[in-house]
Image: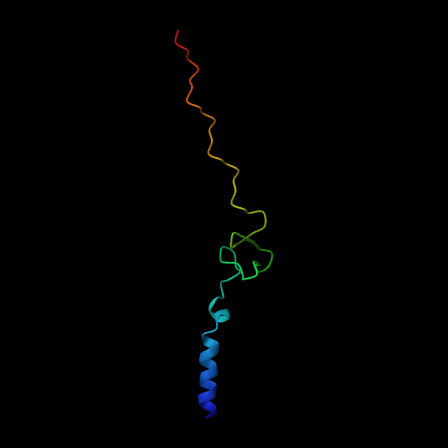
Length: 74
């Protein structure tokens, strides 16, 4: 009977999400449920990143070209 109880408990713990999600909170992985990460990482849009690494390069893709060449026909 003791062996059966032990096996049931072992089976229950093996299915626990905390044991399966060992990557959670690491750089490039999902944040914890409370939007935190391991160490000095920060949670940005649900992904753990290094502070200051927002992924925003500031490039808007706008070249400023309006298509007008400045040539005027008279």
